[in-house]
Image (cartoon, rainbow, N blue to C red):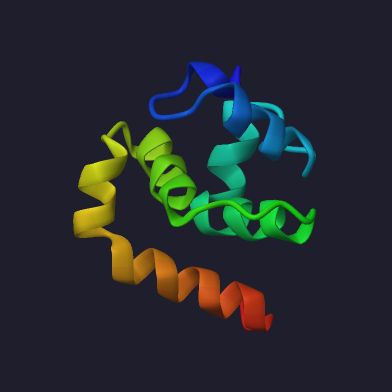
Length: 86
C-alpha cells in the first residue's frame, strides 16, 4: 500500500491512484518526478512537499532531507518531463 510508505498517507495514495499508481512497485518504476507530473496532469495541484515526500518514500528518507539535498535535481527532472524532453 502506498500510504504505508514513509512520508505518504491517505491523500498521497488518493492522488497517485488517480494516475493509476496503486502500488509501491509501480511508484518505484515510474519514479518520484514522473509520478509528480502525472498527478499534476490529473488536475491536482500537489505542492513541492509532495515531490519531496515521493522521493523520500522511494529512498527511505524524510521529505525534509530530500528537500535540502535533492531539490535541484528533482525540479530539473520535473521541468524536463513537463516539457516532454524525457
